[in-house]
Length: 212
Image (cartoon, rainbow, N blue to C red; front, side):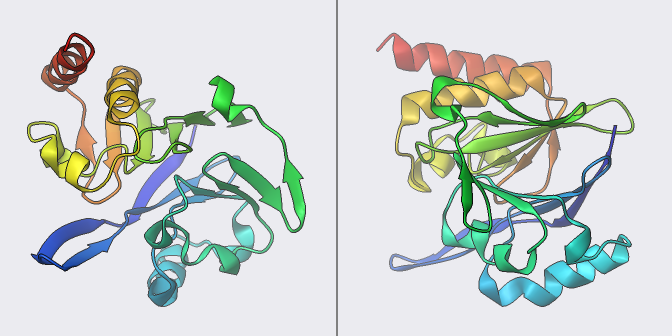
C-alpha cells in the first residue's frame, strides 16, 4: 500500500470569453514506487520541488512520472524527473526508448501490487487514470481531466466545456472509475469521496446518453 499526497489542488475558471485561468492537480504517491502524477505548468517547478521536499522526496527519488494526458498544464515539469520512467497518456518511455503497451485495447499497465494505470479516453483519446490503494486500504483514482472537479458531477457542462474529444467514452469511463474508486482526485479541483449517489448520477447520465 502507499501514501497518496495531493501536492497542489488544481483549478479552472473563465476570466473572459477569450481567457481561462487553469492549472492541474499534482499528486505524489509514496510507496514501493514513488510516482508523481501531472506536473503542472513550466512555471511551477519551485512549487513541485518544495512539495516534494516537504514529503522527504527529491526529483531523483521518483520512479514514474504519469501525465494523465498530454496537455501543457499536465506535463510542464516532466523534464526534472530524469531517473523516472515516463507515461504520458498511452506513451511509455525512458530517455529515447519507447515501450509498446496496448492501452488502446483496454489493457492496464501494472506498476506494482498497489498502483496501476488504466486507459480512460474521453477528454482526449489517450487519457489514463492512476488507481492506487492507500495505507487506509482505500482506492484512489487520480483521474486527470476525466473529472474536471467535484461540481461537474451535477453539472456536466463543466467537463464538456473544458473539452472532450469523445463525450460518450468520457461518460462511460467516468462511471467506470467511480465504480472502482473510494476517492477521486480530479484534474482541476480538490479530491472528493465517491458516494453511491455519485455513482447513480453518473450511471443515469451515461444511460441517458446511450439511449438518445
